[in-house]
Length: 83
Image 1 (tube, rainbow, N blue to C red):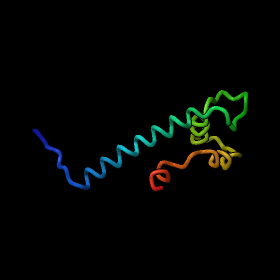
Image 2: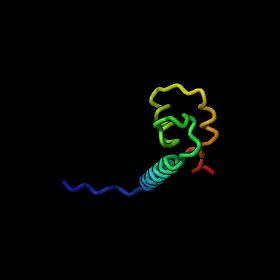
Image 3: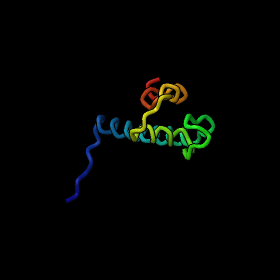
C-alpha cells in the first residue's frame, strides 16, 4: 500500500519545529560537553564536563549547588528559541 504524506501547513510547521528543536538540543548538549573548566564536583571527580554533572544530578544524585549550575548554564532551547 502506497501512502502519500499529506503536506498541510500544520504538518510542515510541526515538522520544521521538531527539526529545529532537535538541532538546538544537540547543539546545547555539545556545548555543555565542551565546558570542562568550571565543574562543581571537584578536581578529583571522574566527571569530565558540565553535561556529565547534569546527567548525574538528573539520575537522582542530590546536589547542594544546583542553583550555581543553573546560573552558569546557557538558556534552555525553549528560552533561546523565543528570544
